[in-house]
Length: 146
Ligand code: CA2
Image (cartoon, rainbow, N blue to C red; front, side, top):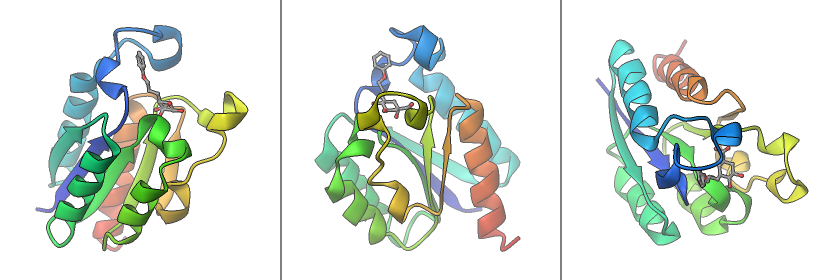
């Protein structure tokens, strides 16, 4: 049984409270629950953490080194400019999957760039809560060597 670290970045603690037309009505706890259930079904433990502070996310990524087998991360708006998160993820030794609830490539131009994508094994965007389940399936297969 491996540990999958699920990280959420800036403002994602507000999910379900505003902009339901973009982000739906599920709150952060719903996303964590769905990911945990998918992880359990695949035989893994999901540990979740959200922060509005870039440095706290970096610390969590550092602590995951040698402990977690994989990271699933929705960095929120940090996605588009946080090179320090990019560098922290680059120093992590397992697969990283970038997840977005909406499809940033179909939105404002400033959302079209991800500084996390170059250090992710892959990115899943636009499928809402299902994207998290897809990320768990992808990570599990990679960890199993399939
Ligand atoms: O689609 C995603 O998952 C995003 O990572 C969400 C970020 C956005 O900056 C990225 O471009 C795409 C924003 C999350 C903010 O979520 C809120 C939800 C409800 C109320 C206010 C903010």
